[in-house]
Amino acid sequence: MNTAAVRPTDVKDVTVAVRVCNQAAALDACLASVFVQTIGTDRLEVIGVDDGSTDESGSVLARAAHQYPAFVRVGQVSQGLSPAGARNWALSQVRGRYVIFLEATDRLAPDALERMVAAADANEADVVLGKLESSGRHAVATSMFRKNQAYADVYASRLYWSLTPDKLFRTSLLQRRGLAFPTDMTIGDDQAFTAGAFIGADNVSVVGDATCVVKGPSPASRATLPDRVALASRMLSLVAAQLPEGPRRDKLQSRHLEVELGKPTAAALLAGTDPAERDQALWAAAEVLRTQASPGALALLPRMVAVRFALLAQGRFAEAQRMAAFEADKDRPAVRKTVENGRVYTTLPFFRDPQVGLPDELFDITGDMTVTHQLQKARWEGPMLTLEGFAFYEQLSTKDRTTRVVLRERASGAQESYAVTARRDDALTNAKGKPRAMGRFSARVNLAQTSSGWPLPPGTWDAYLAVGFEGVIQEVRLGPKRSADLDTTARRPVPVGAAPGARGMELAAAAYYTETGGLSIEVFQRTPLPRPA
Image 1 (tube, rainbow, N blue to C red):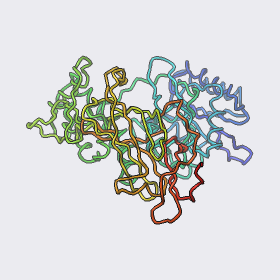
Image 2 (cartoon, rainbow, N blue to C red):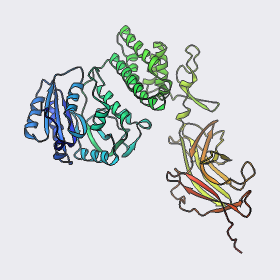
Image 3 (cartoon, rainbow, N blue to C red):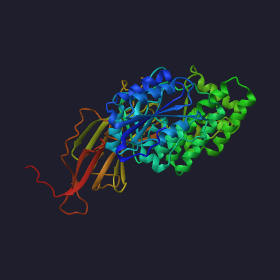
Image 4 (cartoon, rainbow, N blue to C red):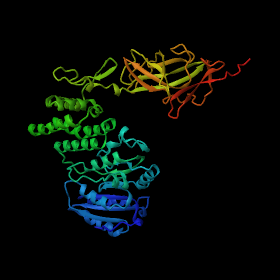
């Protein structure tokens, strides 16, 4: 191994660490994809690590080091409990400002490193996710790669659902945080490493408009349910140790509950394995759910998973098995909804079952209701602003409408609301083609007279729509979703009326659209303009 001291002139832009374990057949293609990177070989280095291979992997690495001695270094470690030892040796040798970890079955797109390094430098990102693509029929995570993101929020997106180390990490971040791959984990050392980088990063960017890493198939997993339970417990503890209680911790922990415990426990419940062995593992999972899963994290899970977890936590394995079978049944009838007191519940098995006694909150899907809406017209008639469009819930009918337009003053929070009238439109449907005939609205917003009898006072008033059907109310911003022909440029003020308490002054209003597209109304005092003769 080359362990010579690193000189300032040795610093590269990026280090590519390639781990290989009995994958000689794939290794040549992986290395070839690195050697042709458009960033140029003068800006990168390759560290290849043979993780105890018994095939020709070591020879392939040695040949590459001989052919490209200026930027390829190789080493060998004894295969250990997990790939952590090989990855840590590579990490100890890094001379690049950034490092990315690949498996021998992975390949880089020709411009991957150039694009990812450029994103890191431009956005001062500590971690850059490059778009992943599967090389075959195996699945890879894709939901986090829909677009480029200069400043991505780990806690408000799906970024954290991609915990493989095939990302660009700023080396100084890893050094500052003391990050390494845990060597005591049977599985998931890459998750622990990548999670620590995400949590410690000042900024995370995404290159999502073109493939960066083509993922090869992972080795066949021999992970058992006890392995998965241990991984879930370890990751829940890791997140809890680094984040205070609250929504951010809940978001990350929900990922580990869903991925590490969700599918494996369902599979165990439905498998024909030894009941005693299965139940022992399920009791361990139940203990994790009881002691480490916060209510906030459980609330973020799909409702079927949350109900199954609640049954497991109570030790009701027979009922949990019924729930798992219900989840797996692709031919089951659509699950009905119950709407009560402004809340929506999914009537899954065990909903209000007195023998089981699960709380209604487990079945509450009010927050999942989706509002489809569009502002289509906005026009002045004196101090009266008429607004027209449509708004409805995808999942609820348009009966019992209570929708209102709400104006809220940005600084004080004061608000005024205005009733809307409905116009039947039998052509109006949701995304599945179901009728939402009473979803159209029209509102006349009279700025000259509010609920107090006075004109709308000076300030910046943002417009919202409180969408109400079947007693369920959800507020959306008016304006960001609007007709293409809606005029968004005119800001000519309109007179509202005499300004109360300001002799000789009048109130005027001007509608405009914010940078994010929201409709707002600026109300202000002015000296009355001369009226046309």
